Length: 341
Image: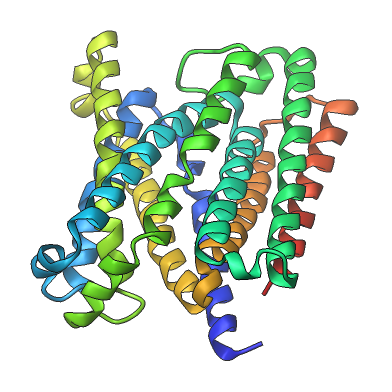
């Protein structure tokens, strides 16, 4: 294995851990409801930080967008909007089903879709060779883990009652509704990776104007992420108006609430930037293999966080066994993906 691959895998490991932990502060929100925390998180993670990172790391940023193909910029924007819708549902899904289950389900689904489509379109020549087959097999195992986790969640709700929703800051939802939210998020969220995978022309434009190979990806993120951020902020504004909760957005927040929003934003945006670095080192397989490994690592991280925050306290027997079996499958999927390197 080359040094470049090892560096790429190292960056993806860091990206997976930070992404897996980014929703942890949601458990400690004091006065804010979901719409308050997600509003400020969205402003920080989807607008402030991507702009700051791009300005610092991409020389001649305005000229990059002037010379990049308009069709690619439009495509990246559309991918961003699709991802934004998935992101809104993602925030709702984590709150409804918790970190160990909700996060794992959604990331399992969008890991499979986000890896398979770039694999088939960008590298069709390796689909039926060893690397391609390992990536496909790893994602199949991941999808199986998602199904088992979903069954575990259904059993948990039947056995644990209100304990399973401890720490929620949004309204309580039935398992069927929460599951639907998570599935839709899993279908739409891979568009974030599609923006990267199909944005090579924008990356090349940034490199031609002085950006390094690693930092040129930040030009793509500045298109995709704010496009999705518009929907996130818009949905939060809708909830603020609907719930008449505007005063709490600023004047009734505690210091902990503000810290939570900033920590979430830094962890999320930092993870995406580092993922771009790692995927670049993996070359042609970056959008497929890199994406799969990133998400497999973050699923394992959220599993640990979910258990440590007592989401499954009081649950015994079959639901817990199914949860461990599902997470075990997700981890096996990560190991199979590793064979595709």
